[in-house]
Image 1 (tube, rainbow, N blue to C red):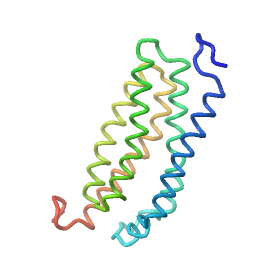
Image 2: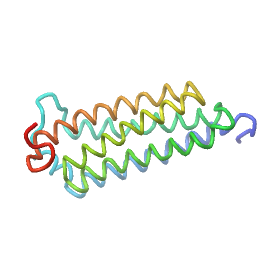
Image 3: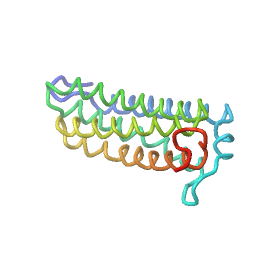
Image 4: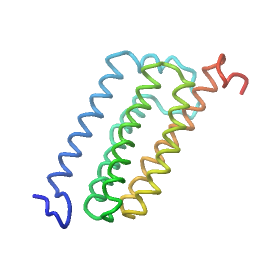
Length: 171
């Protein structure tokens, strides 16, 4: 049971983790069920790019770090910033799912790159703000930031190699 002085307990963390794992698994299932991963495998990719199956597997675990950061923030964050930072982390999780939906749902590498760029800026902002409220939560958010950075670089390469008719043409 959560103590009002110390924030949510371990049961709350478990509920957060199970909920996040369920939503991540559902999103992964959507990628397989709609043929989005089959579409992605037809794209020209850089030589250094890992397979989409591996990226999907790693991507299932990345939101867990944001959820743990949320839990730590709610337990130890400064009172004035606790709610605002909790909302920022919730929007970060929603943005990560939206980025995947834009790239795979629209099946457009250029839009995927723009979504990755927006997520990169937002993730950097959230990690900085949350880090001011709780340094441990801020440090944990650097793992999703590193992931979003890798997806930004990979998204640029996909856009460059596959989107000749857009603003990336000629790069």
